[in-house]
Length: 229
Image 1 (cartoon, one colour):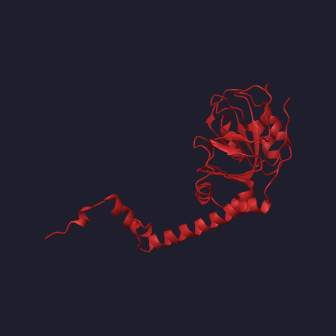
Image 2: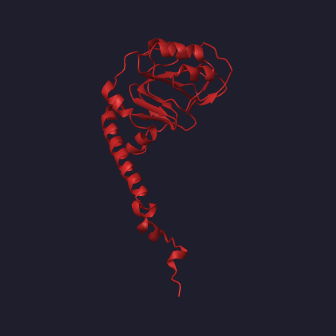
Image 3: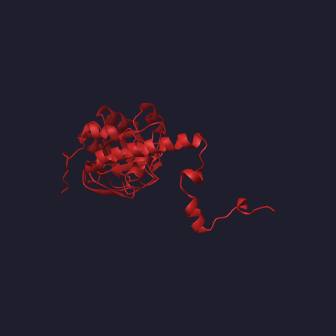
């Protein structure tokens, strides 16, 4: 028997929104270069982004039964993370389910399998990230778990974690760390803004990145090191 878990712990809306101000790359770096999903998972529309609560789903390859069940139980603001074994030759999500997900207020759909109807999904405006694009159809046969911890995109994800995705990729943050990671992300953005200002004022990469001693230890030399008689 397969039991569907519908109630999961969630971060506050305020903390989720605060984290969502930052890019996936900034969040990844700010939390110690953790949480980045596999780069094989890409947006079908690079102009879309999302942040929301992880609602985990396990489907059999070429089978979207549990995805449909997940859409039924998900809450507004949830991100469906749909693990289907990384199987690329299946379009398990398209414009019909896209409309169903959008009507429920689902923030995004992320799968390691394939999607189809990509033009219609772009026009719909629902953020969709996938491991592939495939027109091949699916069945509705196999039960699987909903809202259990899973390995997805090479990362362990727990239901209720917070997920951010944009043109560069997808990152996951532990629910209990969201407020702190948002703070660290803000500090990182401020540091990078200052670095850009200093570059524009004439600073150099070696100077501002404190590379002089590193390069000396590694033995780097240039023709500028040779005095001309």
